[in-house]
Length: 356
Length: 245
Image (cartoon, rainbow over all chains, first blue to last red):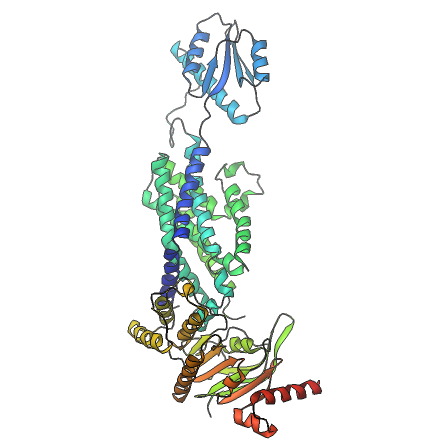
């Protein structure tokens, strides 16, 4: 392996990237847009949900619960429904999501439009919170007390779970897209023939590209972490440099795999197509949008073969639990990404033939 | 004569298509070899075998004393210069960047590259080195492509259709230059469609259907048949070959 050749290829690729300002801007701004949209669109608590309260209660409990529900940001409480039957008509007509009936003996009865699970779940949580608060005010309490959590906050938001996953997905996807088309053109326009005629080895070509793309990767990772931390106020309890380093490593895994795709694709269109069978498993099986533990048992081995699964878990551990490399879960993510990157690079080097 | 390139019974194709069918060829060090033949006859495939890019299916090939692509062989490497038929340039680089990229790839010192760059810009009548290759005319691009092949003064120079789109004055100068470097010991193999041009080579190989019909000095090829031009010799040989099969 010759460092001068790697340097030559890296400098050449970098000059091309820098000259193509539109693409350069696109590959740094796109991940930013994606992470902003995802943060805004997924995992926030619904607001403005209309519910009716029919208070037939004889005790003061009903009034206290109603007060608490009126304070809720998620709910818009309507007290003008006279009876349960009237409220159920309201649900049927689509005017309200739910009706809470406080019966004369003090028990609660909830009537739901259960067509949207997230909406129902939000209403249930709000009603439960109101009940707990009402009981506490009367000097009473549920026989369950949740102690201060070991990790995480008392009221964890779904976005806290989601953010590490989204960061994983964005870092992986954009690194992959960046490299899949790296030398599809070069393989057919004779320029790669020329590079090989000079005695260049495939691995030198690959490392040169990797070095040039790494400058973009560093920019992407910085933007993604800055937006997650400062844009969405996601707490990072662990080491920020460790998080940054793992994100880079994940990017390299994806890039090496992208370079492999690039050695196989016959056209840029085909390269884009070949991205899909990688991107979808990464998006859906890596525990990014939903926990891996919820996947069917036979799918889980596939999840753990993806570097993104290890990375998303480790991101969560670093960000929420504040873990460092001394925890095997974090250390494994580093090792797995490194191994995956080297393996993908080796396969790509074999696939990019000097001799045919 | 020391052979820079030697092929014996060379065979190579793509998939089920046979392109080179038992080709014999010998190129002396310090000579210019013109490869003449219709398109599709296998000229480019032959050059790619010489570069070690394509592995022969049968027969043997030696370039600068070793089988190309074998461990320790000088080819591929800085000993060879190659100008493909397609321009094979990075359209987004400037002329200067292109030359410096290939200079580094050929492991030249920056000072050497600068010196060669200055000479080549002048010799090939190239525009401002700051100009981006993608915005040059076809002829200018062809000259940049030639500059890349000549940059590191290789011992073996493979030029695939180097004079397409090059004006007659520059073509004459290029031939003068090839003669000079051949006198200095470089072996030059070039493919061409221009039959008159091939007549300036030391040796001409008349290629058809993946084989050489004849290989000799142009004067020798013309004389025995009483023909005045290579073209007539080529036609005659083709007819004879056609009659045989």
